[in-house]
Amino acid sequence: MSESPLIPSPTQRGWLSKKWLFLSVLTVGVFVALVGYGDFGSTLDQIGDLPVRYLFAGLGLASANYLLRFFRWAFYLKVLKIDAPAGVSALVFLSGLAMSITPGKAGELVKCYLLNSRTGVPVSRSAPVVVMERLTDVISVIILGLTGFALLPGPIIAVLAVALVLTVAGSIFAVSQKASRLASLPILSRWSGLLGDSQEGFKELAAPKVMVTGVLIGAVAWFAEGLALWVILKGIGSDIDLVRALPIYAAATLVGAVTALPGGLVGTEGSMLAMLQQSGITKATASAGTVLVRLVTLWFAVAVGLLALLALRRIPVISEAVIQDKEI
Image (tube, rainbow, N blue to C red; front, side, top):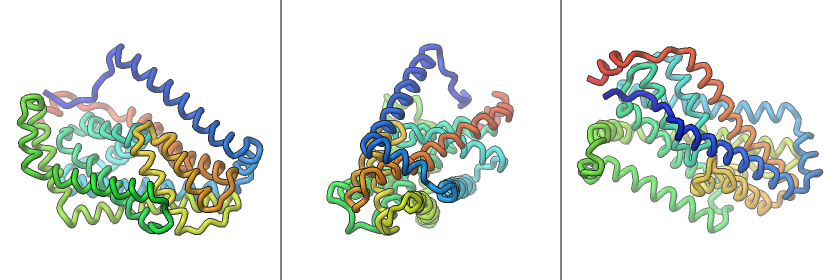
């Protein structure tokens, strides 16, 4: 049976519509709360006073993050000997950015189905790439957070520690014999072949040299986004040090992931706002900075992803026969 993209049923489409409505209401609510918290007038004035060059610098740094992560995606595909046209591979990767609004970016698994439908690469072959992307992202963000370890409050340090332990433990379990036996359980027997193939691919990506390369690329990529926060804050008049801005961005990103809300909403904004104020930044500046950096990072990523999805629609879906041939 081929692994083609799932087409939502009428019931699923209704559920998705409700989900998008919830996301829209939540997003508007979060941004209104942020602006209101810092005083509407003062916060909006600071947002409006941001020099355009700082805005473009932030967008450029966010773009650098996407470019570096694409290099990592291409590197992982090469390690697993997955052959995909560069243009298709790039559009599939960028399309995944639209899934940044899903809890923990779990929706990025859609990249596996997009790659399958355009190139015939089995989902079980590409799934380990997406999983390893998320794992190395967590490790990279934790490394970024450790740049100002001593400056972070106790609860945030606890979040970093728990995230690191869970990531390492999950990686070790995924390549263990216990994980292999888990796939043989009756409840998972339907997907035993897919899980087995995915585990083999994950083992290849978990090799020390490959893992270190992925983490290093990720660390530089997330440093670029952390730098974007610092640049934005500088643009609205803050004198915060880079060594404070980087761990704040990293910690807020992880807190948002832990909340499991779409795009890390509420958790990311709330923790970032609190830590910025703890660093001596005024309410209005902290609110304006948080709003701007989320627009430059999260919502810019979603916009890029949606444009890539539109472009990908121009590439025809390959036939079922071709997909089946590639799976043999």
